[in-house]
Image (cartoon, rainbow, N blue to C red; front, side, top):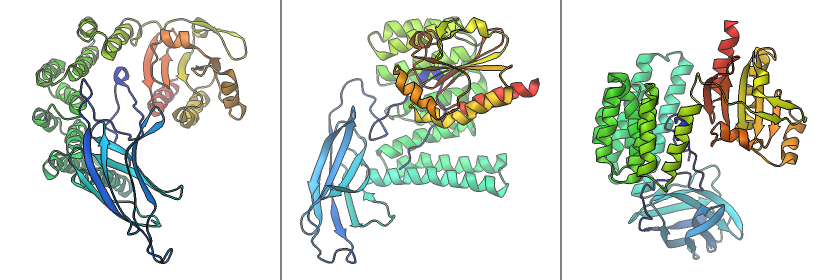
Length: 453
């Protein structure tokens, strides 16, 4: 299953959580009680492959990944009829890995929703021949409906583009219908994880297309929803578009009063920092970060606020970019001061990162379009192993200046997510910051500069 993407996250909130499940719904301040569900089914083999009708020995495993090591949550082996049954105990309601194997060979893998009290079933015959395993239960049926709705939305948008009918009215109608279906899933599948996520997604997706409806739904959304604060962020932008940042800040205050945990309050406080920054109210933003450091001491939100403070004081567009002096991969001296007179793209990355590798063509095209007389790309690898760095460049042409192990520079530029890129103008001032998979936006900006020449 493909997980939905709920929109681009702001720089200071950028965070990636990679787990086997691919989805985390836990928001509690302390470890919640474990959840238990039942899982049973029948596994068989198609008669044209094995006519014996002896289906014993299929192993069914439900697991999660903890620091790269699988942690078994449920396990069963089929009897001669192919029947299996197990109780699954998981740390939180969520999505977990499912693996079916026999005689040491993995035959199929997928994902299963585990929720307290849910009863799931599976009937499958091998070989699958391209078919997918379909797990039946309230929670898993809800998840399938959620995914199908998102997939249908994407297909219809593609069809609009291909048909030449990609007009605002048609697109707005598509978004309106999809968000209505998503919002209604919480009634179709009450108290399900997917129903909760779909309701929040209706707000996130609807923001920008029907802002007033998004805000109305926000006020109906339960604060116990796992994506409550994601919805709050989108609703804040919707309110700002409708009535300005003062109204958006008032909405954040309203949502703070509805929160159920200090985690939610901290997340909304971080959004308040961004709201003040959007309005160039930097003193107000600093006041919020200071309060966050006091209110959420000894938590990662205090660290977040400390980094945000540094960002506001040192790394806003228009400020002079922090200077640095290093040795590049060839042993030559390199300082930002020496690059005055041309635009500089300062990028931080790891060479083994698949995202960075995928974005290399766009990166190199910027250099090609603008030319070495207009732009310099300074690439700072956060991989400390020189051999890994050198191996990366053996079969690749990557123009620009390269620095290995520039942690001190990364600290100056408050880098905590890779890749991160800064654009610095010919006078040495910061222009913008691009975090994560934002090469398309960076490319568009830089090509625009070339067209102005």
